[in-house]
Amino acid sequence: MKAWRFYGFGDMRLDEVPVPELQPRHVLVEPLCVQPSATEAQLAFGIPTLAYDRIKRRLESDAPLQLFGHEFCARIVATGPSVTRFQVGERVAARAKLPCEKCPLCLSERSYLCRKGPVIGFDLPGCFSEVASLPEIALVKVDDTISNSEAACLQSLSDSVAAVETAEIRIGDSVVIFGQGSMGLECLQIARISGAGRVITVDVREESCRMSKELGADHALNARSCDVESVIRDLTGGNGADVVFECAGGSPKQGMAGTQTLRQAIDVVRSGGKIIGVSWFGGALELNIDLLRERSLRYLFPDISTQAHLEHTVRLVASGRVRLRPTITHVLDGLESVPQAFEITANKGKYQAINPAQVVIKQ
Image (cartoon, rainbow, N blue to C red; front, side, top):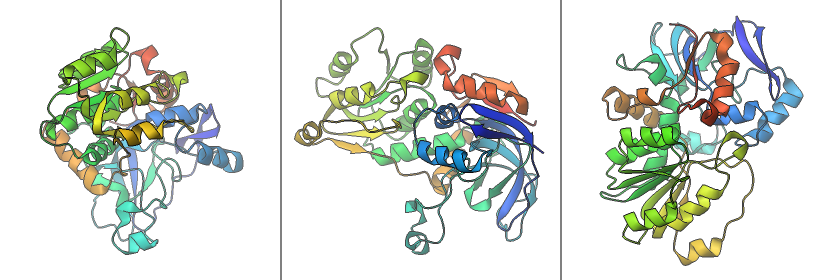
């Protein structure tokens, strides 16, 4: 079969490789639609972010490697021994981070807390290939009302569900979301249906602000044309927001905000409020902890998404409570288009992309 393999950062090649063997508790799938995540797009070009050191070590010791491709919709073509939840022909999506099933947490039925298991696309091959092997434990069935393109977004949406759950939004809470890429727009919609009152979003791209308004923001602020901190204080009666999601930070080399939006989040959250850290920064940063302490601020990080989160995303999209279709702006055809999808996703502003670019591998 054909599969994309990385020989180093910035060096991916479409190779002929053996079809993976069918293992117990695994299924073989044919990927239908797959997209690189924003994190994968940074790593592909050697930009430090989540798992950079791990990927670097793997490339140095084991290249060429099948990497990335954990955001996908695929159709099952074969089931291995002991697979009980799925049948050939069903469409599936997956969560990325899996429990190890061996540690004390897993053995005490707290596997949702485990951080020792493999990650699809990082430790296990993902779906930038004609055929992929996936563990049954990672998968959920995709509802017939959800398109292949929408299903490829479910993994990201499940992380956004986990982020909003971490915020514990109360009815009527004022919410600010910095960054209106795919996860920022997802957090917007989930916060809205979770009881948020006034929702204020911030971005630097006009197309993202327009999309934010279309999907339910009360106010979509373009940080290039207004004093964000002053406007948010005015909109919240001088108090600041109850909850702030920071979804814009990261490498400026790929159009992200560096650490600026985190510092803005600290400025615009009310005393005693919560900041939910969704972004990955790719390195250490300096914060005035005494300021957070003096204002009783809570800087929280989402739990990893579980199978329950992923199953909930299917219900949210199938029911129309969360809309993904408007955010899908670039859809490419054929496995050969994968490098172009990485290029677009790594430079969304240049291409006016909202969601990561998708590749339709098979209809």
